[in-house]
Image (cartoon, rainbow, N blue to C red; front, top):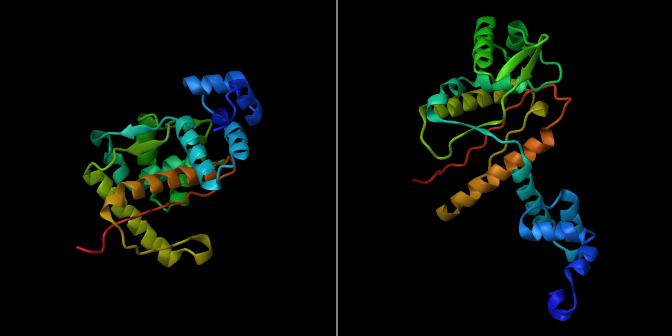
Length: 228
């Protein structure tokens, strides 16, 4: 737009207006450099971008920069059938996590034997390790294949829903949040809905990433048809 209004408007002038070095702008245009969050905010201010556009740009940047995820294939999914395996992997991110079957059993409400078996399995697989008595997670974030039927994934969701029912009945309302909304939709929008849910997961994960975590929570999101 500025180039059209002023044919003499140069890349150097554009970089100056954006508060970004000319070299950085050139690298971005060539695809050899990514914009930083600060650069995005500078551009948004100069170009007067709306808040939603800015957040989408930041989300795209976060997807590029976030740690690689280990995708579990069908033959590796069996262990996620039991909810406590993923619970232990999250326990390992707590600041005071102990590599102790007794401690894990107490935190997750398990039998000590079950906790010990899970610790042994996760250690053998290289997902966790005992570092001087501290439970430490070694694995990168885990994810499963998308939209591929799996009895293990179905069982995992079934157990998650059961844990939600238990929390609904046993956990104080101030320590949980249950929300349900019913929509009328065009089924063609379903891929877009799934993409929004995925982005929400990433935003929430970023928000909750902290070195001072002391509890493990489970977030279940279901989106399914009521009509037949």
